[in-house]
Length: 218
Ligand code: G3P
Image (cartoon, rainbow, N blue to C red):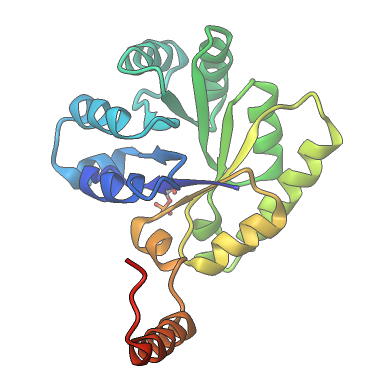
């Protein structure tokens, strides 16, 4: 499973990119607004930090303007994935932009039928929002499983499932178990995936015993 980070905070992205384990970035208008920075500038900066896909979202509601905005965003860098909402106008824009060779991430997906339409529109990625369904006591992970089953029924569908709206480490694990192609993870959750108290305790014990040998490797 590929790991994307869900943020527009360049410092966080840079720190995670240095691990060599970061496969891409997703942003959205709320994450951009949180930076207080110019949208196009921050997206260009992010594209220079990571080689993988960087999602930047259009803000128009009609397909013609979405396409124009998408073309402008795609012109910022070769690794831009234009984000469009899962609406009929978004699907039309997706079809047009992907036909021009632009990566498209169809976002705000909350049903399997929406995901099926995104794949038919040629989406590079579809972003089902797990956490926002869970917030309503619905089953966000069931949506990932349904999309995986449907896409696997039709090998011609090439769209990657980009598990989004991830709230915790269990969402990451369950997304991997369900066969999501990508998980886009908030920085704090992503950093937390590597930690475990028994790892810390075991390492402390190893080094304590090693210190008693008086030896050094270098
Ligand atoms: O950026 C797309 C998605 O991951 C945002 O989800 O629910 O954390 O705003 P949320």
